[in-house]
Amino acid sequence: MKLYQGANLNELYVQALHDCVEIKSPTPSRVGVVYDLGPAVFELELGSLNILTLPKRALNPFFAIAESAWIIGGSNKLDTLSYYLKSYNRFSDDHLTLNGAYGFRLREHFGYDQINYVIKELRNTPESRRCVLCMYGPEDLTNKISKDIPCNTSIMLKIRDGCLDLTVTNRSNDIYLGVPYNFFVFQVLHYYLANEIGVNVGHQRHFTDSLHLYENNINEAREILNNIRCNSNELSCNPQEFIGMILRDIDNINSRRFSEIKSAPIREVMMMYESYTKKLDHSIFERDAGNPILNYLVKDWSSKYTTTNNKSSQS
Image (cartoon, rainbow, N blue to C red):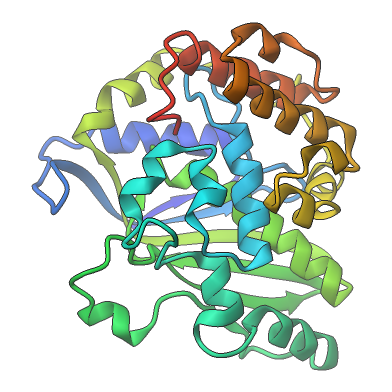
């Protein structure tokens, strides 16, 4: 099993991506040839914002913000995400919802709100070791119909030394498409839970039983590895402040009331995207969002996708 810890997120990701690319014997899978590294664990650095700032990754910042709010809001609506990522349409069974929606599964799918329950449990019993949030159910094992079976299966929560530790377990994780967003959206959930419980944020860990890279993304992976540059110093950011901007506006983000978003950088970025969808004017993304990380992510994403107006694969 691979263990990735002790470095900033960019460095950990590069190590894991390199390990996947170096696999000599790819194997067939249900959706294509895959370079499967097997089990792996990431322990992410305390006090850092868990969002990749690697040149050529072109992380979609609008989608990352929206998915975070979508999960905490408990939604399963397809259009909330497909507005930013058209390719999400292919995962819906009914063209309206997503069967494996993490927030819906945490809030409603199993008959009660798991998030509210663990908040109450850990407020009342900080030493509890029973707080496990479930996203994968027994019915998923036999479901041969749905296009969207949860990859992230559970979240374990424990308070240690006055801080909330969060561990995500994952049955299968795509290092190019899935991992970068998982690191960030579950960190936003981590901060939300810690704030509601009234404790500090502790360690964030991700365990996957299958860390892999699909062959159709290997050229993009090699491009990232060939353009490595350390951005950790120039793009350092207080995660509490950054994530707090999102948490203050969950409802406005989910309902796309962008002009009502209280946090100026988040408001500016989301309104940039809204303007682009209407005008397809690449120059919109040259505006200053008022936050260096958001400015970097918008520039890196837009340089890859908006020049060709390719909105079907903005991943």
